[in-house]
Length: 233
Image (cartoon, rainbow, N blue to C red; front, side, top):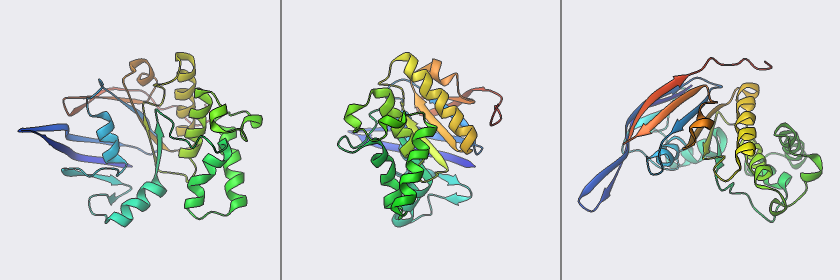
């Protein structure tokens, strides 16, 4: 369960106070695929940074499985990011001179997992995101954009996070590849029972998620709820 309670983030710009996130509250049950839509500059990325503990709110709180982020010291917040959060970015943020499998293994190495176990899990995750076996050993810069995004999703799943935060995950992809990526995220949320929150300006992508929110002028409103499809359906 992810609970967001009256979250506010404000910045000073000259004499003005800007609040890209202004009193945002919502809850997501475990295993939900949700989206937040909004125009560029509407505060979507700021909200993701707050949920992922990359930034601190001016006020309010994020509670993950009963643990308040507002009450955690810096060391515990780092542990939260490493253990409980998986990030998927529009620019992929992969290491280009490493292979696909090495990129997926990296978070597990930081978590102290044995090399043999890292390799086995990385290969399994790359199979789950449907990256061809013959491409798993290729360097990232030899893969297409869609293939790189699949690797990025596999990497986000590496340490079995409670929450995956995806920032415009289809923004650099063509329409067909983008549809495949959102279908993949939907399947992973069901099969892994992982909560996934996608921020996007693409309403057609958002319509494929179970819950859809809109962020506008710092305020969040829920636009739609779809029945959840059971795993294996």
